[in-house]
Image 1 (cartoon, rainbow, N blue to C red):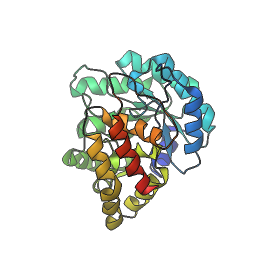
Image 2 (image 1 turned 90 degrees about the vertical axis):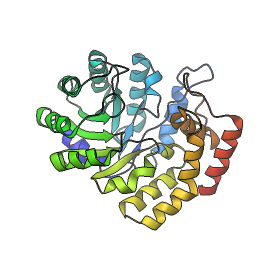
Image 3 (image 1 turned 120 degrees about the vertical axis):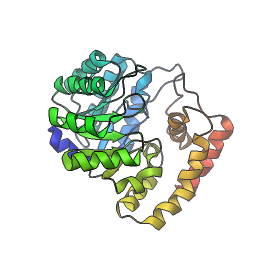
Image 4 (image 1 turned 30 degrees about the vertical axis):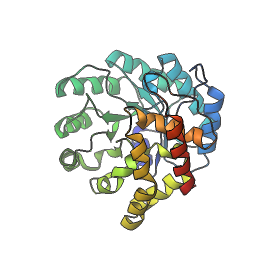
Length: 301
């Protein structure tokens, strides 16, 4: 896909952020990962983001990221676009961007650089350098130490034709309104807050037409039905499902830092499709919490 084709396609449906499967010794379990992707690919989603935040991309080595991306590209075989991650500082992100293109990925998710705080000018140059290094369409994740203002987003859109999607991990209503007012439909806007279903309906009014669904990993029918209700602006259905599943799920997720990722892998394990443990510094749910999550999933399956 060209960058513009990718951007147009991603806004048409829910986005999948699969977990990355590990063996008990924390090595990558490619066979289990492929089986998971094969199962999920029977459902209609608009994009698969390999080794993203839910996929513990932050805990993978560059070589492991390349292996995960290549496995995803091979397994889905063109049925759905595969978006690869680029992480770390500028040179590291460029290297990963070029590796993703060589691996056959359809696009790139540029995550915030690790640790270093930066001003808007530095962030604009960082994003631009990565965009220049690849022909892939780039989704920029505005979050943490890389939150872009509306002015910066507009400048990046003007300077980089392959910057085609903005993923919002902040939820600042005023900033999103300013950004959409300034940039409009030049970009596709993706909801990227943890458990994005919680924010999906209000953000739809701000031009955020799709979002990353972590729960799609283990309750795909529920996730797709929820997305359909959001797009139809069926408030009654959305809030019923929030009360039925999403909010009780959040109550478990919020007990420990890092559970936004851990609970997703626990959900896959809970339905009998083992994804293995999370890697430190994340920690797995307790046995009691896993039991509670399993019972909650049983209500909506």
